[in-house]
Length: 229
Image: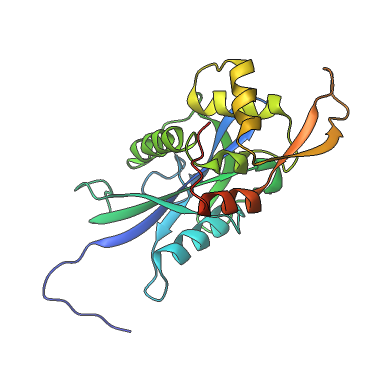
């Protein structure tokens, strides 16, 4: 299909900030670009929006094509449109972010990505384009939202201990939390299901395991419940 315009038009891309958590801390998923500009540099997964797809579809497609990650909930973060942010042409990008349990996703680079890998947030390579700004905003959004919505549970395995839960919050927020107060708050919310199980094959004393009860949470929200942890 041909398109002819009297005036120049900007192009639109999508970029995806994918957070994961492991024993070493909070991670971010990056791809190594295979083509110019910034060939060989690391960047957020993303690319140009095609004419026959929505922004959400483009974000899911680019993420799957470049990293192998699929079927994750992507939430729009912000639109970045500084002039000159892309040396090829005038490009506006819509950024998305998601939280995943990185053990649930096999990473495999493809299409125009030379490689894909998880990087620690405190040990990142130089990023292409303005992706450092996009990542910074995503981290700030995560820190601001994690205490008032149960998005942090996406970083945890389905079954987790209160120790793991507290460590996740401390890692995301970048500060220590009082153990006694945190556990009292967490259990008092009424959205953690006690599984009557304990950890296995751990070097420390085995802790009780819990699961986030999403159905219970959604029902509580309908009744005016306010999540805060």
